[in-house]
Image 1 (spheres, rainbow, N blue to C red):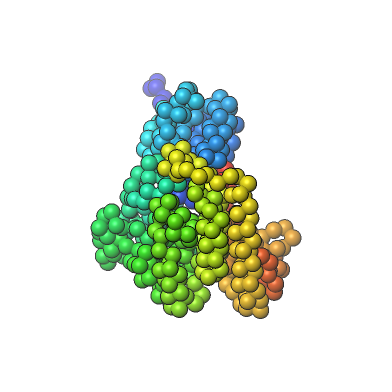
Image 2 (tube, rainbow, N blue to C red; image 1 turned 90 degrees about the vertical axis):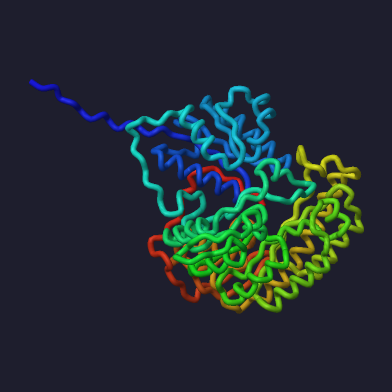
Amino acid sequence: MSDIVTAPEKAAPRKIGMVSLGCPKALVDSERLLTRLKAEGYETSPTYDGSDAVIVNTCAFIDSAREESLEAIAEAQASGRPVIVTGCLGGETELLKARFPTLAAVTGAHRYDEVMEAVHVAAPRSPFAELVPQPAGGFKLTPRHYAYLKISEGCDHRCAFCIIPSLRGDLASRAIGEVLAEAEALAASGVKELLVVAQDTSAYGLDIRYAESDWRGEAWKANLEDLCQGLGELGIWVRLHYVYPYPHVDAVIPLMAEGKILPYLDIPFQHASPKVLKAMKRPANDAKVLERIAKWRAICPEIVIRSTFVVGFPGETEADFQYLLNWLEEAQLDRVGCFAYENVDGAAAKALPDHVPEDVKQERRARFMAAAERISRAKLKKKVGKTLEVLVDQVRGDGLAICRSKADAPEIDGKVFVSPGHALRPGDLVKVRVERTAAFDLYASPIDFRLRNAAAQPARRMHRVISRT
């Protein structure tokens, strides 16, 4: 009687817990790791229970973010699982190994191969584990109907308050053919909105001398204009973040006026006082910036400009702060965020003299946001009675649909609350009439809606994600 050879039983997949902290650019890193893990047959989990190892993708942009990351690492270690640290704080190997000597591995930002090698050691995958095909565009941590598209890594600026270049390196642009192919795959998978991110989106392609590559059988240059032209062919919302107001940005404003990309620019101005901008090592010609904004509005009256500012930077006087308030009144920005300055270990600003007392920083922040709110209220009131197209993010059990207009990026801008919204689903594009306004939000009723993807469902958030502007 011959021996009977049986096939090996399929091994239960190893499970990896993931904690993802930081900005949308770090979230993209987590998504790429998730895609690699899934493709290799690993399961992922938002908790430590039942996990074979834990990945903590950290943030270290400011001291409070560093502390949050350190707390997350400590919590992960307390679970008793092997812990792999990556992300911005992962660049501080000596600090982490001194504080957490039993970490399984420490890697810097976007070091995907190193993270996967550490996973293979901490939680070896069975040779009989089932491989999972990668979906178009990879696995996402955002809802199904929108996604972040990272076009480059690193930054060539050396701002006094920032340590990103030391953590993520200098500018490293992706080939434009690769970027456009990823965007096309995301659109084909049902994504209705792409949010273009980088440390400096407007510098895209500079490091590779705007090299050409192929997409759809044509040669495209790796620059902001060609990128927007290509993305504009996909027929979905395209939103630009982290854009510096360089002269060549002027070329994309006509594309906004034509409806190819959203009439929206996220520009991190940070301040307006020439003295403070110089201390920050930022571009300091505020007059030219105001001229450029006026020019953009003349070409595309619907353009929305959002920005973030830092108050209480070392050496900022009351006169500097008042200069900023006056500039804000003249600029009339649509969406504004403001942060009180925080120190960062390793940043040049920490060693500057004349640090502003914490209570003064907070008082200035409150005054700044009061001015921003007044501007926002006045602008939004002009929308009452008008028709807008909005994208549905969520529908509550009581039928209230939480949406965003073309003027609103997820998590950082306002919302459009639509009622009744029982017939709507996440990912629907809806025409609504604005009924009333608040400081930063709109309230509207539906006129009609178009289902761009009948199968659109809200994505199950598998991971803990904490976003920062």
